[in-house]
Length: 489
Image: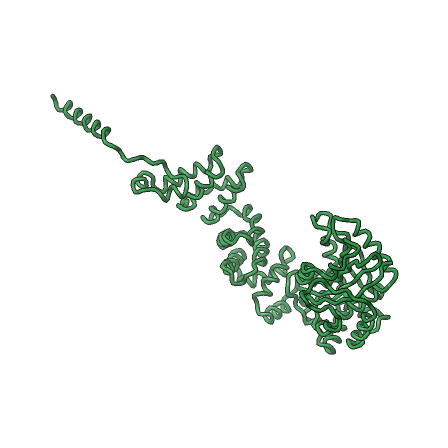
């Protein structure tokens, strides 16, 4: 046997020997985190991580697989990481694919954000409204913004930050860093400048962030020193100088700006009356009181009653009526005399004017029509606003929002009412869904909560019988006062 034949024979013998041996069981490549975690040493040698990533990326793009299978493969990719821009760019194409399932698309976006993939601004903006309820996603998005957010994302980021209830949250520093990354300036200077930028669309939210985090005196001094380019800064400067007032919330700031735009000529008169009340009664101005102050100050026929006289006149009037106890308040009294020390001069004037209004026969006739209309309408409660007009309080009906899916027990205000309410005495709501409705007299806990959150005075009108109703006044501090029982004519 020659040498070549011997070598061939030996090779064949070795091949036969190998075939005859029991080989290691060849496992498939892992397609989920559970399968990856179960891999033994031999499998990891056969399938290195870079192979596993590419294999699972192919599965993520495979439209013939179920969403669950594609998402499971994406989780493997997320665990191992992607280190090349081409693969990240390929994943990003799924975000632009209208046929990509939403659940998969959201997980792809999470992965790309964690990998700091830059071209995601268009996909991140719609996410900002969801971050409040998804802390994990919020942290990922905020971290991405620190390195990648373009300037046009600042307003969206500020809105999200303002909705964060916890100033000590894990994302707080991330928000500050992201704002600084976008602007190239310290976060507080950026937000202050944004209040003075006509193009910036989240001024109320920016102010609220500053108000909660900055020293009040320093913030006030900085605002006063600015050269105003917007109604917001001009309004703040005027209310600081004329009323010693800085709003606490973004909503109050928006009200200040609106009043400055449309009622600027009334500011000096309102400020003069504020000064008198402040000096005599230590009254502190609230923006919700501007309507009352400005109209009283300009009413030549209305006597400027002192606090003592207001209290006596209101008390005398309320004493002549039967009262229906408010159904809410957990045992708190709605008796005027027991609440009087909690009532500001604005509260007292509101009650005085509303009591006059509800006592007029013409108003009682109008309220009868309203009560009957509300009774027949089972889609929602009716309500409106009270204004100071021609020297007296006048109630104006605002139909409920037809787009809201409310109940017959709840008044759903329109945007028009919310806007007009910024310059009004108070909001009124009817509890007219039944003729004998005494058990729902007074504001509900939800109505008290809305008054506190939206900073308005309220009046609840409750039908007691076919020809009578009760009235309860309340303020944003939760103080409720019964005005007694009136006729429906």
